[in-house]
Length: 109
Image (tube, rainbow, N blue to C red; front, side):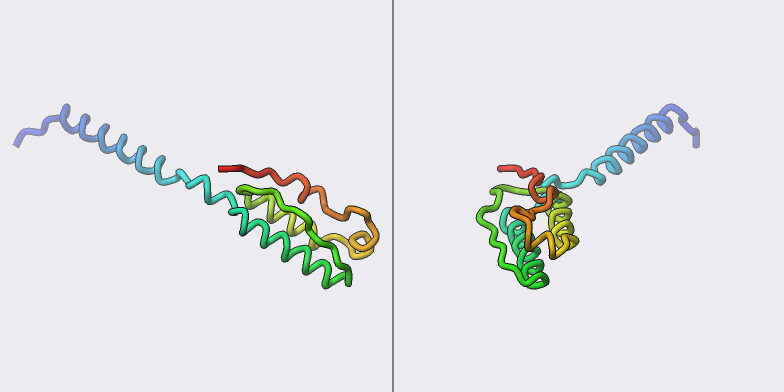
């Protein structure tokens, strides 16, 4: 049996190209995986405020939420910022909302 080096090189290049495309496409993530829905984000923020109110004995109320999808990292940073807020500031400040919550970017679909 005779070995044909030209067909072997062509097959190798094709295999490498298919492998690169497969690996490249498998790393693509769904953009929506990086966002909370309006309901999910709103629930997380409301729970964070309620937990801080219980901890501090206060009664802050959220009057509105930003509609649309919000980045998970932004909402999670907001929730963490509310949790780390000192009760003395939370109770006495006119607007105790952390900057991380005010800076939430959102996306409408």
